[in-house]
Length: 482
Image (tube, rainbow, N blue to C red; front, side, top):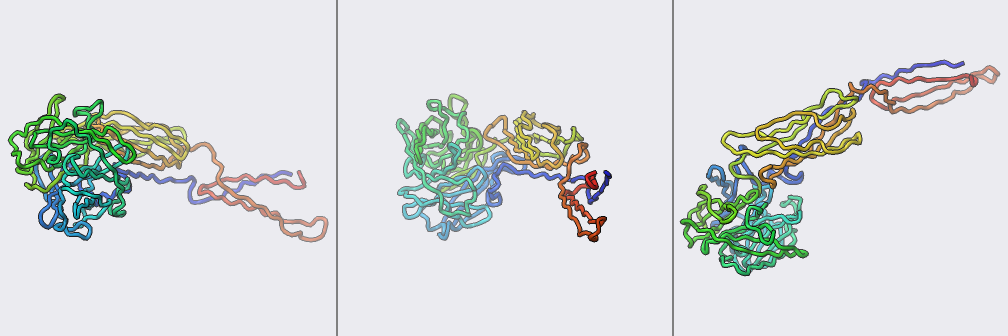
């Protein structure tokens, strides 16, 4: 005899409800502490440069708005480590990394030491080894090469006492003091007539392709010697182990009214070949330009602090007078597409009145817990455009989709935004194919009711629904093999 028993085990939910979550990560690495960095730009996109100037008792940081020419004092530091600023022999070189973290290179007892100046402190933190330096250190810059990060400081533009450090990728500068290892430099200055020891700053060119090349190599560094009226460029020709080989060349640029007796003590660079110089005597800030055949000056952009013990730095990104703040986000999902849903993506490249814009090159890849992966989208977006659409495939109910995106400035490939978005897909209403729930089963037989031939034993079947959905079970049984 065969009978059928339908058993219904009800739980709180018919299907798993997956709540959508979106996480956005900006272009800074996750370990970078933005609260300790100085602002690279204003909320309206105006770019900032920074001047570090030492007086008797402190290092004063002044912010310069490249777009408006206005200046603003932002911070003063009275100590580097446990040493008061006034006790150092000289502090005239500074550098800033790609996230706005600021450093100075201080010399004392014929040693130069890099210190990190966090924006939320008034005391610098030693981050690198102290290296020999018998002369004034008045030029420095952060730079990247071969996917790694470095700092270099020297007497003038690679003129003497050239000292360098390998910078870790963690950005946790305050957390691991004094651990930077050293790198070295060989500088070939043959044929150069500029007074390199009087070229008081070095600025890294993120993309030097707009400047004269040397045997097909674009320059990596720039400075200006006011006495000989020369723009000075440094080319990384090779790297062997921990040693960089640099070739220095110079090109004419008239000082145009600046007094040659006072130097250009600070140079700071943004994305591409955007470079600005500060004259010590007047505080004037000018842009250095190159038209493909000769160097020139832009107009006076404003005035910084007049001083002879200063340096300049910037975040090495962005184009002055340009507003470029594109975004990428996941704003929802589509209606049912089969038994899944597509991501709803919003891409924006807003414009701002009075500012130049740039097209945005969007690319993104995805991976999902339902096993899918690939390219989600790749296209170029016009200025002032916003688009919301459903790229890519449909994802199964409950899938967690991870999207890694990159947005590149079409006018300056060195300016990039990148991040990660995640979305958990709720497509429960789209599922029509029955799914076997996670279940567990067990059976036990009781003791005999008696010793008689017609005695009975009770069979107990236990079914446990281990899922959070309502499940329906069909149980078949037979007696005596029937």
